[in-house]
Image (tube, each protein chain N blue to C red):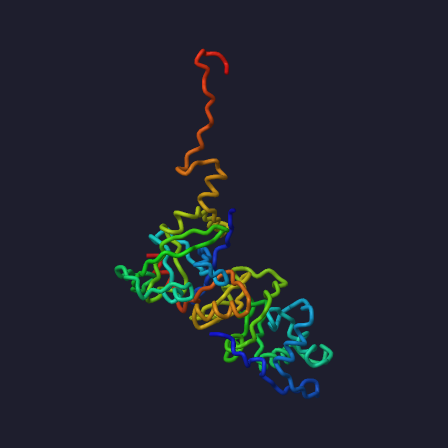
Length: 188
Length: 164
């Protein structure tokens, strides 16, 4: 599935620290993408192929001091904007990128990135990836440095997303729904 | 070039993790999306999910299906065609079978088309796979194409029996 060209038109109204902001995805992306990403400790948002701490991103978008809001606030606002948010320490959460009800489509619909994703600030191991994949059953995932960079309905959609985003995956595969049964079948 | 790849891991629904050797193969130059393949000495060839064929530029509509196989508990038909494969900095042409319906969302790297091109070392203790094109390996070890040591150059003997 190709990214939707109108995804950057998403707007939300948020109230943070007593101030009301009308945030537009395109404008937020533009503001944030000018910044050098700070160190990601936990939650991140991916903008134009680079990952930023969610608080850095929302701080840049609103001009607020980072101590004025929580990372949960920032995640919520950025997710509502349709931007892909995720968590670096996926081993603790079982998820590398938020999916739930909104994130996969938000990720699919994001404006294609033009550069490679930023390297994770901590090494991510195959075990971390395995813990993450439980949330992607029956989804085609593209992996880069043991992190899921996108999940799609089909292999073709995954290739299209990677091309549109100008990104190369290390590997692409469908996460099995029942790995136990599948591997048992292959072993015989 | 020897490429070292960590085993892939999958969490089992009832707990525990299974690690297994994999190789990520680039098919027909689609290098943005190498397809993950289980390294499988029990597979006679390279098997890929049929639904990946179109993205690799392969049209299966004119290919004849082979006999039915059961792979991973799924009965599937194999459509064999030649594609370009690449890994470990090496590219080669090989017959692969696209399986319809998909037996899984990954491939199997088997004997014909993979093991006959790539030397595979599996270290189950360290959970690593080492991949090296056979041609590179033979050259590195000073072996000829049959795997025997290169013959040392012989100096023709002086027919008069003296030192040359």
